Amino acid sequence: MAEAGWTAGEWAGANQMFDNGSAKTSLAKSCGCDSSKSMSLTTASQGVYPIAPTPFLADGSVDWTSLAKLMEHYRKIGSDGVTVLGMMGEAPKLEPEESLEIVKRTAAIMKGLPVVVGISAPGFAAMRKLAQESMAAGAAGVMIAPPNTLRTDDQIIGYYAQAVEAIGRDIPFVIQDYPLLLNVVMTAGVIRRIVMDNPSCVMLKAEDWPGLEKITALRNFQKDGSLRELSIMVANGGLFLDFEMERGADGSNTGYAFPEMLIGVVKLMQAGKRDAAHDLFDAHLPLLRYEQQPGVGLAVRKYVLMKRGIIASEAQRKPGAVLSPTARSEVDYLLGRLAKHDPLAAI
Image (cartoon, rainbow, N blue to C red; front, side, top):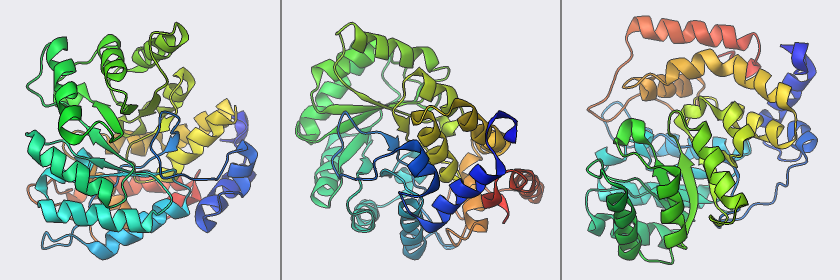
């Protein structure tokens, strides 16, 4: 894929960075990125915060060894932070004690990097408890998704006001805007109102689909002075990351079996290397698309992470999807094709 500037040497250099964990080698140097890290979650936060899956053993128990290995991998490849207990982290299937233990262990391993904790729950009591305990354990902030019962703009705005009151106004929080799954539609104007009404809101996890125009609208609000500074991190499995960065996103807050690609695209875009960023993105797009299938996406992601040796098992806690032999062979085929362009996929 060297025709647009992503040469074999650049591929090798990028993968060398991912392999040796240095934040000051190869691609990071060429991007001029600052490797200094801070635990604070602020409106200036940027980069890549992978959404971590929760590793399980075949019997359904949490695989603490694989959790540690996963977090160490995120550090090694240059992640700027991490999010745990998100929707792809199977958070609703966890016991409260397990959730808090995941936060504690993640914060210990990722020390010096921000850890964001998904605290969405049916009631505010559970959210308050997990939020406060997570912050005490070293988390940098929390993420709140709206319940699927909200329909009007006033209901959405009112919900976030009550959530902030419940967890405490001193806890930085992230709005999760995911209408495809949550069935809650937040316009750019509603998001602006939530941000302006709640000073503790520091980040938007933008995963509307289509959402490019929403990113542009929010950045235009900032230009006209009607919206304060806000970090915008994008998701949707990274499916639109290439153009979302061009629209003004600060980075990626999503999951993919090769988070190295997300990091590479963000760094290249930040360095103004548009064609190289699109080349890297395009090489992964077939697998990215396959992983984005509703209902089976997490199974695909865990299968690839297992093949990469990052987690020990592809198991999900029941109920959960299981890949058929045919699906596994299709993923293996896509990995083989990807390996022609990115050596990381040669597994």
